[in-house]
Length: 407
Image 1 (tube, rainbow, N blue to C red):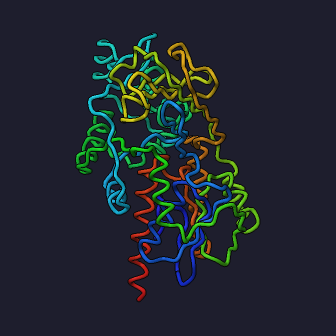
Image 2 (cartoon, one colour; image 1 turned 90 degrees about the vertical axis):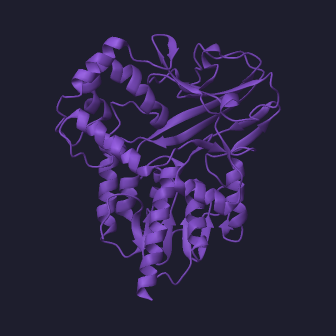
Image 3 (cartoon, one colour; image 1 turned 180 degrees about the vertical axis):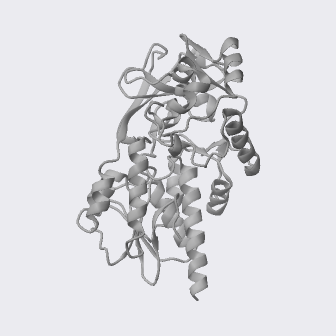
């Protein structure tokens, strides 16, 4: 059956080992789920370490997350952590989330007049175009100023991309039945009620690497580090690298896949964590601040010591992480006594219309191939760990059901 979401490709006649390329979080989750269901897997990573961008470093004043600082929870995430028997910590409650607008950190960024205008605009008809950016979809409702200064901040904090580039259908995947904005929001509200799960940010006492190390421990017999194994199209293969490395890996065996994957764009990001005896006044009692999209200024600031316990080794030391596309930390940056900076090339895929079209072509091509190849990563159908885990879970459950039906 053809699918329009989740992993690309399929596997059948599984009577041989499954090769998994890439030891980042996606590859580790795929390997764990398959092994837990009785499949023979081999995980190949070209680097000496696992986890990809998810690394925890120890500094004299505390720990530093070089990539994701948390996992946003879901039923699948909680089940996985329970299976692994790994203790997790939850983010502090009642922390405010700020948007920086008109040179001020605001928890309620909309002005009264703007709220009234939005209420009236709820009865406007939705745009008809199917190929539309997030900005173009919401601008008739919110207006240019609110779109750029408020909505843009929210999406910028997740995708690190301007909402004028973000493809609406990539972000809001479900089909919209309503013809007006008010109906659209009622549909979203109804879907959230069906989930009946209150999501929260989770991490671990020693940082995110604790999660990676636990997966490594379970998979220690299946992991091969420092290897440049070539992909053999006659074997069962799952490619969990980013799209550029996937393009290189598939160049000889699947040239059309390779050409498409090479075209997916990525954004580069700096993660700059500082330890300071000064506090950022605007972040008191806050989770963090998001900023309007800019190539020079920070995209956001995380208040690490407020979010999770033990992120600094002293109560007198504050830890903040600045996410930026440049080395400019902005006017809110405090004087610091220690810091750790990481530049990630190809940090996040750009969820633009071009990516959407490429993924559709990849899915269409996958139906014409023998069932020996899976392609998956955060460029396919969601950038978060919980989204990827959800799709992997669905795939493995379906795989097990199909195998049982055959026997």
